[in-house]
Length: 285
Image (cartoon, rainbow, N blue to C red; front, top):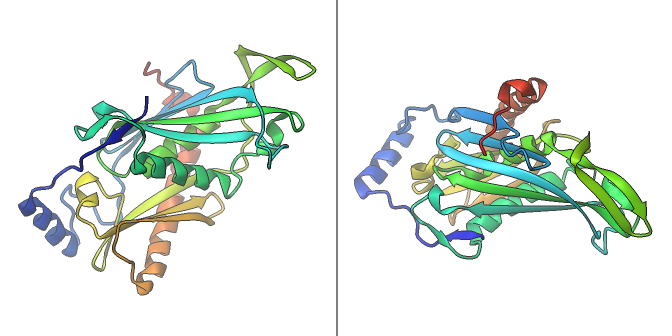
């Protein structure tokens, strides 16, 4: 079941003004520097039954991503490519504002940003996931679950997604007869074919002040937010702006510089985790 927030969190006016005042003074309510991420904690393969999974805590924001693989039919306009589907669910325990219902624009936007961040740079070699050309391919279901919401869902979800995809193993194909493909999910062999890793960096803007990784209270105070998707070759492969207020053209170069710098730090974290996976493996369910 998908879930949707129907109310927005409320920041008392006095706290709202305090956050704004601190930001304009170069300070933040949680003591971080303007360009500093909250602490990041990573768990690999927390869901044993998935083909791949990862959980990431960014401060108190907590996201779990699971990847499942099935044999299915390719899209008619992409007959010789596997299929990637990204979904996001905001579960009720993540926030007192979340209630049962269909996914709202926030969940849909999160899934689409992550989907595009993977699709545009061809992070996954979908052409390598063809089983019977034009007829049968591997379907990748990347399901993201927001467990605790304390701001910056996109960056947390992108990290957990990228790690889960790196952990994914493709089940063994037992037999192929005509168009009937039999797989054995108890035996997982080849890794998912990945071209490169991608991270996102979300920045908050209030007047002329830029902050990295806005927490939930800062998200409600800033004028706008912008997310940059950056691959491991330092290319910007996607941009998503959130919020009604525009961004001054003179700030664009500054935003890009900050995004590239912080993306490099996140890619270093990814490499550290992926080079030492045993250190981060922990079963949560």
